Image (cartoon, rainbow over all chains, first blue to last red; front, top):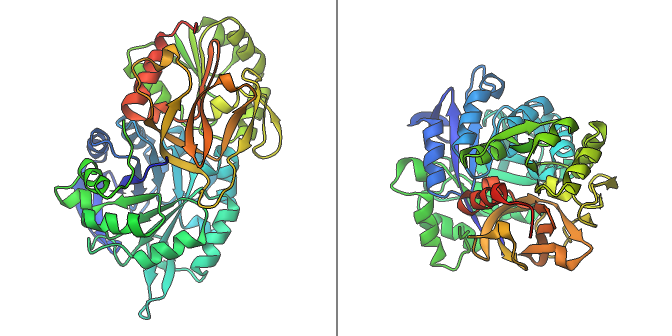
Length: 253
Length: 205
């Protein structure tokens, strides 16, 4: 049986890790390589590293950091943030990424998704979708680290990305990001129903109970957590021990 | 000397790290001439069967790999590297494989509630004993990420499966040739153990 996944998310700003609230108010939360090693020792199921550096960002300038993160991990590592072409995706994969997370480019030039999928297979292509609700509660898609409103609907965007070669959908609630107030279950339910791809849910998990609500109520493959592991006494081992009590399946190693 | 073949299909660095950290001499190889000096060969891959098959042809690696396998030295394919052991693959058209494990690489069957790709940790159920499985318990979880799997022509060459509504081929083997669909280099303790066992294997079953 395929197991559920608990996926720590690391946000990279320059060479440091940060954690945001609603994609702003960055707080320093440590060193990326040391954090990756800690998550590996806690038997996390996968690691997601997103570069959120706002100025002059680029993984091209620091393949050595990516290599160091990868060498600290005996688990899959997904890398993203500002990846807009096949060359950058190839550079990431050559330096230790198992999968790449593409976000803004999926609105501008979906052919890039197709090219990466044709070279590395669809399973290496995660499409990130950042969602903020409008005052009426309708979900809207945002690119460029939550700064640019996209006009395409969630339904159309999911369908187009799936056709273009996406292998997983990483859906993140900007409203819930960093709040630790619980995940947007309605949004996750909607996205899960729109696609036959595995869904990774992100944004708002602040307690193990929040994780349980989502895994029990929504067909998602994984939950990605930032603040939960950054700011509390929680870790992936304890999260999975708690969730196992509710019959949820996790890996045995 | 353990060789890791660079087929321009993804993350070979983590395979090299795993072998290296186990204390073995390891080298990345990218041409057929270098295979002579190796004791063991690993073909890794995060990739696309068609692209990987074309790459083998273009770099004229097919014949040297077949000669390596015929010499009786241990050969291990990982993920797409495992799929390349088959006769042919159907990802992005029909492409030839190495034919070391007769069979074809086909898309995971669609079924209600089955999300493809098959991504994540799944239990590997052994159907046969093998020296490389030593010390690894049955039904431990390994990390998979794939949309296609190898359907072996001979049942006895399918050494392990993972259940995803239908049984997916997790390990194939035929004398000194072995293939894992999952990523041992990304599968923490038991993955490292399999790589370690492979590096000490003499190729005999």
